[in-house]
Image (cartoon, rainbow over all chains, first blue to last red; front, side):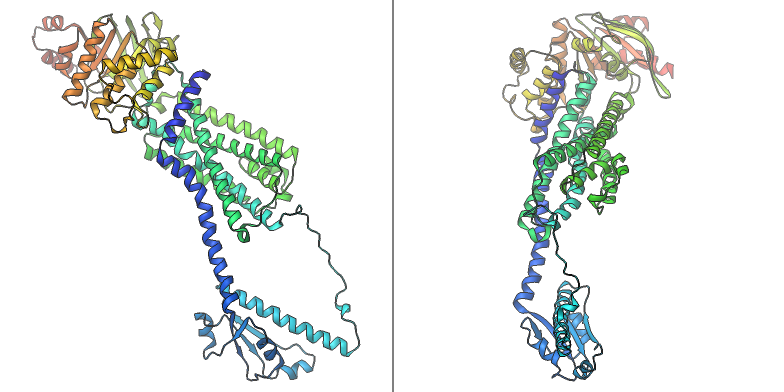
Length: 395
Length: 241
């Protein structure tokens, strides 16, 4: 290998790549914009529902023959409940004219006096978010009413209400100060998944262009007649593809960051990950890019044309999604050691651990050792393909 | 000087070149004449060290094909026919410079050489423009400049005029004449009889991977008692079928 030749190829491929508007759009612009737009829409619809409820209140129908029952009066006194009369309750809930219907027995107060539980039915549409929120609010009010009844009953018997609370739970949360646990949990789930998928997909356009694309344009043969040997050509291309992959992954992370800042109610308020962890996460995702760049370049060199390369390469991205989704829900605090020996899974698990603040040197060492092995194997595979006459001249 | 000795190339279940030997000298255009699939491109690819021969050997200006492939590549320039493979998003100059750099030329020499080639091939108007919108003839010139930027002593032409219009063909023909005048060793493969007659000093006729005739055009015509190269060719190739 001749480092001078490697650098010449590397430089040329980067220039070539970034002069292509398609590359700029697909590997920088789209990754940056996709998350803010996606979560923007999600956040927008979420906010609209909340705002609707706040402004208009919750439309509720009370079905009872006794409108003077204490519970009816209690519910009517709540400002955010807009009590509405309906003729056909089922239809009204379905259509959304009311969010929920409360069925109350006409003898509510009589039964209550006998100290027996009084049935109340809440009907709502559990496919509708607003309706579910309404049911939740109603449940809260009813339990508020229940509590007051319990207090009255106990007071009547001269018992202190504290008898009902044998244990006073004090919660102490372990998420570092200023952070929020939910944000961390969401990030520990989404980030590794995104990093894995983006590492595989960001190298795709560059890999296609550098292998099959070069073949299809007829530039590969002249290139092979220069004094640069094949390994130097391959390594130059390989590094350029990896850089494209890293840039793409970085762009998507910036996108995720923007999305999180503008929609904290969906993605949590974020957290402070120590700089060393960020560096290790970055290194881990660069490893992923290095692995996928080599595999995808090898496949792309094998393909006869652009189109063929795309056909062969799309399963690769699906292949990444399997381990990525397999550990998606896994609790980062209880990952068994064996997972750190499974390709891809280990790197994803390392990222998960680091996000929640676990720094396990053994896990990190095992995963990176394996990563080096995978990188070596994948480069070897690419070199094997690039050296084969039947692959290079497969037209 | 190119000396080819008993070169063979076998692909999986097909022998494309079946032990051919020939020589090519400085200042001489050697024509490789044969039908499609006769083994011309395979032979040239072996000489350019892109393919490894199954058997046999060749020396190019004293360098051994198998032992010193990089030195061999330093001696040769190669021009392909068909679609001109150049990088659309680079300028003509960048395309040429890329190949100059990969051929180990010094930075200071490269720019001088590109200007020289640009003058010679009349490319000054568009040398710094991106090649995407170039006409076929303009692209052809870029690929010629790219092939000879490192001033190779040996030029290999693999059906360089296939698919070219009259003007672009003329550019290539003129270029071959220039190379001959400069005393380069030239191997020129073609299946077009008129082209071979016009340009070549000597002809090697290949059929199904084997050499069926080797000599100057007058020699061949005399030997086969026919004053038409095409008919000589048809007799040799047809007879072998």
